[in-house]
Image 1: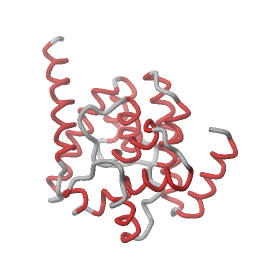
Image 2: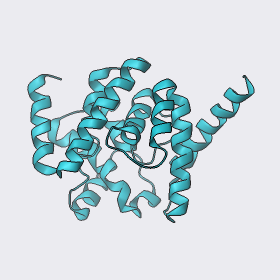
Image 3: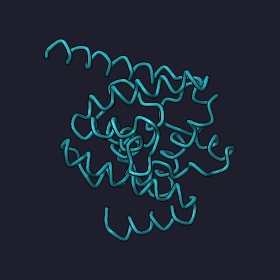
Length: 197
């Protein structure tokens, strides 16, 4: 991706997101690039996906749903019933249509960054975690999850999904099966890691 294209995207985000959300997008892009460099993924792809991940976050709800219903990705009934998840699914559609981006290493991480799923590839893992540990995040466990993630991405994912399940249960939110699949996968890896110690 050439520098003018990145500049164009930043300009769009600046004009269409709140200042707080724009800063978050820049921070996620930076965290994604750093995680890519640590874990052997393409830093430019991760930076771009991180930059774009919330591009639809502040679109009107009806516009988000319209984009969701056009998604080429699998979308569960629970996600359709949970508007907080719509911006991610909508984002992948929007980015493809507006910028002509067809690379699934960019589109798929945008689509899955809110709910996660089982068998996430390295790009999906990185954007999921970059969103949770970006510099602007200040929830109670973020320092610990951030430190673990930069040391061991898979262990960070275990901590993140454990936290995410707990948060959703406490807030009485619907939880898609894909989130449970991810939780089970990374919990199994953590159990195996502890057995091998």
